[in-house]
Structures are given as structure tokens and as C-alpha cells.
Image (tube, rainbow, N blue to C red):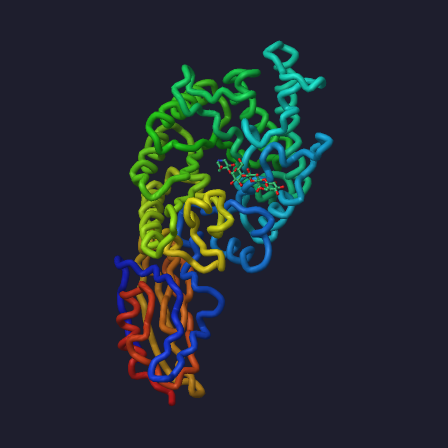
Length: 465
Ligand code: G3I
């Protein structure tokens, strides 16, 4: 039996587990579904890079495989922050967790979005103290000392990373870095800047200085000669979805650009919740699209609130779908979208209710299915054929990509689902087989309904008993 059905223009990112169907006492084992209930890889559905914040717990085993399969890039959730680079004796070295992340990224072909070089938090106290342990003042010599500490920190981080994984632009997985983090004030300060120790001692100029040092180190001294700015330099902040905070952010970015500061990108953390309209994230991105910078969603998470219920998880799936639809619609403005963690209980917001894309057992949440479902549908055509081979039913699905862009789709069948990435004009096929002696009509699960309808017709009569 062979059919060709055009499904272009219809949504066909199918998701979900393919359930074991037990009908009439006959078990149809979904052996072709293999290891995962995850339909497509998020990274294959997005024109921007998608990332996850991780630590060493996520670089090996099944979760390491999941990260490598689903994401284009990773960010160290904690271990590339300023204080992570120093031992108890104030000696600069790479934290073992940072090293594990760098090695993982390099070995698995992932990029690293670094976080963060200059921050008011998670920074050693001695940065801001003199040799007697007293707070630095705004004297010229104290300012020079702090500026030199910043320079030495940034150059030291770049050196350690390049020693471990190669020059930037020559195989080093680091391709972006949050140079300054959370420098915007939460209240209406006169210049809109956070009153941090960096600010108290050096004034607004510390931000310029951080970018200039980062540019010299990551795109100069430790960059492959000839590489064109291999590490994109970002400013990063939270609550940019709020108009007041955003206006202060915009004003600073405009000042930095007017002063010729080498800033490439603006980061939006987007630690949101279900009650924040996704239009607020759209507004945040749109506000920067004419400002000569690229952008990134750097720390996305969306807790459900507690107690976590299945209807809240579904609502969260809808939220992630709508959020990713916002990002897809602004793909030309976005370098990457990073989710702040992989599995729910590992999140810093776990207590607020299951904020991420994966359950703790690594299975896909409605949130992941939502993010996948937001991808625009490429035009594809589908053939389905069933046959018997040595008592097994073999169902072969062949998909043609009739569009002009690479298509990342998932074929979902009663016997398993398979993610396929197909070049423009190309085709891909996958054979699913089952030991079932009879194939029960109506046992299909999933959301690829435009595929499943023809499948039902296709497999209904297929019995190899
Ligand atoms: O390292 C110690 C460990 O030795 C100890 O056993 C453990 C006990 O609680 O604490 C560990 O440190 C914790 C660290 O995470 C590593 O797990 C800190 O207490 C904890 O405060 C720290 O929280 C991190 C937080 O930044 C610190 O500011 C979160 O994991 C991390 O997700 C969060 O990330 C920030 C971004 O960098 C910037 N934007 C906001 C975002 C959320 O706060």
C-alpha cells in the first residue's frame, strides 16, 4: 500500500511518547521508538541557536546525550562566574566544572555562550578591597587597582579557555560571552545604573572598560589571527520585558554605542511566569532591533506555580509554544535562545514549579512540545507504505522536502517516532517495524494528525499473522 499525501502548510511536528498499544490482548511493542519519547530536536527546528545552562551533572550519561541532541550551545550556570575562577588563595585557575563543560562542548560539537565576566554578585570580595581588607575608595590609585584586577581577570579567563580548547575562532567552542551582567538599576537612578561596587569605585566607565578588555582578549590576543570577532560580546540583564527597566537598558546601550564601545549583543534573561504576556518579550526584542546589535534570550524559564498540576503543565506548554513563536518571528534579530537549565528539579526556580523543558526522568514535557510546535512548518510531502517481513509489520515513511530551507520534522507512528532533518529538495525515509501479529486500528497516539490519519488507513489492514 502506497500513498502520497501533501502535508505542507499543516503543522506536523509530532511529539509525545508512542504508547505501547495493548489491544485485544496483543501487545504492539514500539521497538522502533527506541530510546526517546522526544519527537524532534529543538536545535533542528530553530534558525537561531538554542542552548541550555548546565553544570557538570549534565555533561555525561543520558542527560549529556540529551543536551547534545537537543541543543546547539551550553552555558555554565555557575562555574564561569567571576568567583569560580579563583581558589581559596586567590589564584586564578579553571574550575573543574568549567573544564568539564568546555571539554563536553568541544567533544560534542556544541558552542559555549559564556556567563559572565563582570558582575556585582558571585565575585570575590577581595576584588573590591585593598591589601588590608579595606574597601577600595575612588582615589586614582584604587581605581587603577580595580581596573587592573578587571583586566587581569578578563585576560586570565580568555587565556585559560584558549589553553584548554584552542584559540577563539579556531575550534574553541566559546563563541559569545556576557561581558557585564545586571548593571541596570531596578529603580529610577539618575543614570539608570545599578549601584554596585564596580559602579561606586569606577563609575559608568567600568562597563566600557570591561568590553574593551574582553574585545582585546577574546577577539585579539587569544583569537586565531584573521578570525573576524570570533567571540560576540554581550550585555545581559533581567526584567527587560518591563518597560521601565528596558528604557534604562536602551539608554545605556545607546550611550555605549555612541562611545564606540565594542558591544555586539544585548541579552534578555526572561525569567518569566505564566502571567507575563509573551507580547512583553516581543516588545523587549523589538525595542532593540534598530540599534545595531544582535540579541539573545539568555536565561529563559517559566515556572508553573505550585502545586504543579497536569493542567498547569499544559498551560506551560502553550506558553513555551507562544514564546518560541515570538522568537521565531524575530529570528533575524536573535543569535540564540537559552533555557536556564535542563530538568525541572535542577532549576534555581524549582520551588516555583517545574520551570524547564524536561521532566527529571529526561522525558519531554508539554513545554518542549510547545517549543517544538512553534517552529514554522516547512513544505514536505509524505509517502507511507506497509509490508510484512518475516512476520513483522514494517511501515516505511518517506518524506520529501519540497521547500528551499532545511526541514526538521518528526514522523510519528504507532510504532515509534523519528526526527528527520532533510536538505532542500532532498528526502529521508525511516522504517518502523513491530513484532505485533496484528495491528490494531486506532492505536495511534501523538499530535501529528495529518500524518496519523493516512497512517491509520495504511496500517489498518496490515496483519502479518
Ligand atoms: O557552590 C555551593 C556548594 O558548595 C554548596 O554545597 C551549595 C549549597 O546550597 O551551594 C553552592 O552554591 C550555590 C550555587 O548556586 C551553585 O549551586 C549557591 O548557594 C547558589 O546561590 C547559587 O545560585 C545560583 C545563582 O545564580 C547565584 O546568584 C543559581 O544556581 C544560578 O541559576 C543563578 O543564575 C543567575 C544568573 O547567573 C544571572 N541571572 C539570574 C540567575 C538566577 O538567579
